[in-house]
Image 1: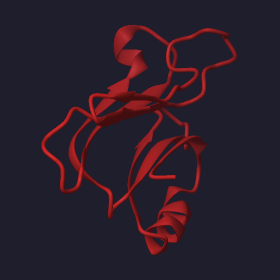
Image 2: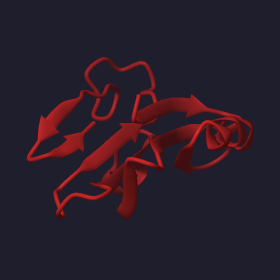
Image 3: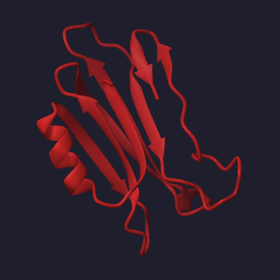
Length: 113
């Protein structure tokens, strides 16, 4: 795959090392407090470059101690397009909570995950 989104990541450095050797770049966002897990998004560096990233801490919005990564990825060799990848850490067992799942969709030549 060109983009990989992971949640409940506890050993990011190990995963990053393996995926880097396979041609991926990535970012990680740890959950707040004593939590050691978080979410990570990797993209194939030969296909995309990172234009921007936003980190969202759900506690800032009076929600569970989850986080989300929003990435603006630009396809290499193509005009600027809006492309974003997002992944939130797993919810606290409350079904339907914001960020508890992800979806994939093509949008304007970009990728929305």
